[in-house]
Length: 457
Image (cartoon, rainbow, N blue to C red; front, side, top):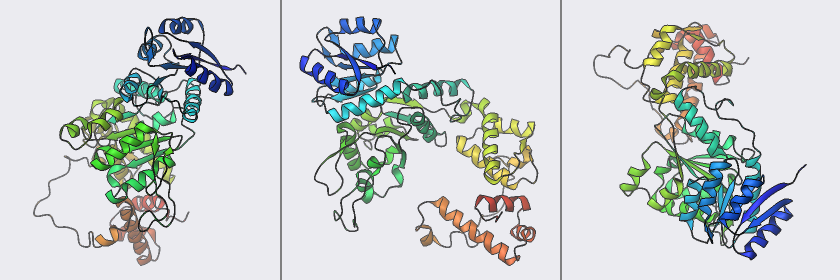
């Protein structure tokens, strides 16, 4: 097996020697140069799997090296070495295409991790999020998105994923992780708006036993859970300002201190974030720190709304119906041309999430394996209701009980189980009679029982 080769560019002999020794111990051959000119000469002649360059060089800077590599060898990962605290130059280099950065004085442990990840990145097979079934669609917008995902998966730069609610921002984040060198490590998603403010620091950074009331043992935080992998901060705009300061420091220093801890812990985590809000507007309104925005928004990736890629709706609908049918071992229903036309014309303000909800409702209630236009019950096609609307009897009878659940979905699922079990008991487990008593079709009852694991088959 041939040994890997790296190009080191630095005008300080001591730094070059340190990097050569470190890489040599990792069984990586090294060529070292001290200028932009000599670096370009080596890049033109040899085949490298990694490039490490200082930002300040006698005849130019590391940014010039990054841009040169992006132009002529875009598959070569290049990391920049910056002076301590020079985050601005590191961010600019990553915007230009740098794989990652390391600060002086060089932490050898962090350097070895960076080198390992970079080498793995250079050896990744060429694939994309579309042909691996992660992103569904063939529209121009989705093809551009898939190309961006593939490029960003090779980098370690923070990515800010923007887009409307329901467009699939978490799926994009998972795709970036799945296609990158960290795919064998954890992908940890966190909804920043769902964490109670008083627990936020402990949730992110962990805590030590006895650090506060109720801290009966040491607990690892989300950063530790994502060590070596990817931490996805969903709805990052919902973070309170005091937590934004602590998050900024953890990202910049690549280190954290658990609540009640005395020593900092080095961390190796890639940060991806998303929000349906406009972060620029949140910054202008003073609700989001500009320095954190600058640090997270190294690269921005916009996920298009469904109305801008209507030609993908037939593929998406087929994929979602196959998933629904597979989960309960039902035949995959077919959409009539009229149903498909109606779906393609509907604006879907809730985007792909709304399409999924519409199809799940239709799949549950439809009596046959063919879905027609009237089966979809899309908003706007419903007859208007007359008279004042009243809350159904018994709805939300147990708000205190709802608070005991981690999410509304789990609470509603538990309620549905109770209703179905009660109906089956009342009908002496005659499913046909239970469906009639509930006012739903037999098919709908079967689907709900299988979905909730109550079918007993």
